[in-house]
Length: 107
Image 1 (cartoon, helix red, strand yellow):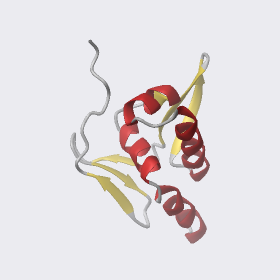
Image 2 (cartoon, rainbow, N blue to C red; image 1 turned 180 degrees about the vertical axis):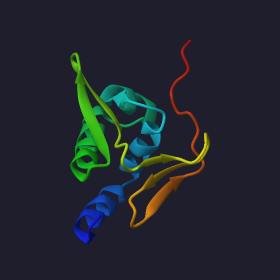
Image 3 (cartoon, rainbow, N blue to C red; image 1 turned 90 degrees about the vertical axis):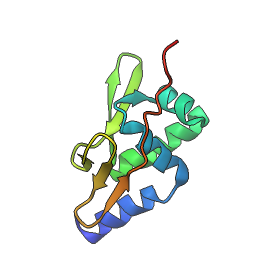
């Protein structure tokens, strides 16, 4: 990753909501509404932040019927073990070590 790409990724990481979205996506692929509900953020705010994360290359999306599903880009996603997960950019990395399953339990 060259310095321009690295700066773009680091800039995308410099927001609390985007970090919460990335942390949630360690649980797997999700739609905007699922992410919004589970991180307690406004749908439009999450949608905006997902656009920033997608433009930086941190997440990828795919159309699934009427929904757009988002997931961590596999190039950056590294699972150290079940509890420690890392985004590795070769120039640096971000570790989410206190990660818990944030998905709502089915009742």
